[in-house]
Amino acid sequence: MDGTSFPPIPALDGTRLRLRALHERDVDALFALHSDPQVMRYWSFPAWTERDQAVAHIARLARERELMEFYPWVATLRGEDELIGTCSLFGIHREHLRGVIGYALRPPFWGQGLAGEMLRLALDFAFDALALNRIEADIDPLNLASCALVERAGFQREGYLRERWRVCGGVQDTALYGLLRKDYASAPAP
Picture 1 (cartoon, rainbow, N blue to C red):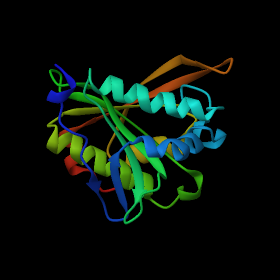
Picture 2: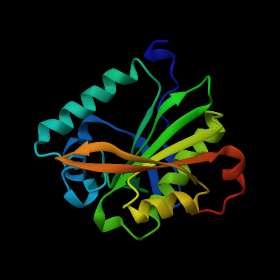
Picture 3: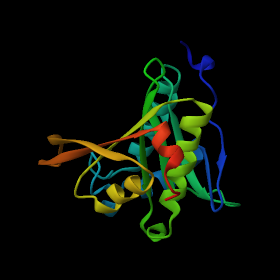
């Protein structure tokens, strides 16, 4: 399947946020997000140290989008265009009706319910537009805020993978979460 046969990355509008496609113009804000040690504390790779990492990341995503279906969104406040976070739906297996979700938000926007809105927009798209049945999330179990976020959306903790990631000389475990469409439909909004 070539990239032209994949559905385009749609803009998704929420009450306070908009998810839109990632563009080259987002390089500086993306670097700021991924170079922040607070944001990257629980990720499976270390904080970026050079702007060129953001440039390479955007170029890599554009190349990979030609080969596989995934949706890398930038989160912006409604009516604005500056990246305040990212949300991605990836690891999509149409034959198995599943995908994986990931997200990040700049610290000044933490604790305002924006991550929940970002998650809800992406999940609505995954279950409605893509007709997926299962979404997974791989979360460091020490990231209590992220675990609580997905649990409020209806995700169930289904597994614990010990020493799954090696980052900066340390090891990180994974709490593996899963959400089925039928459970999401009945879950309260986060």
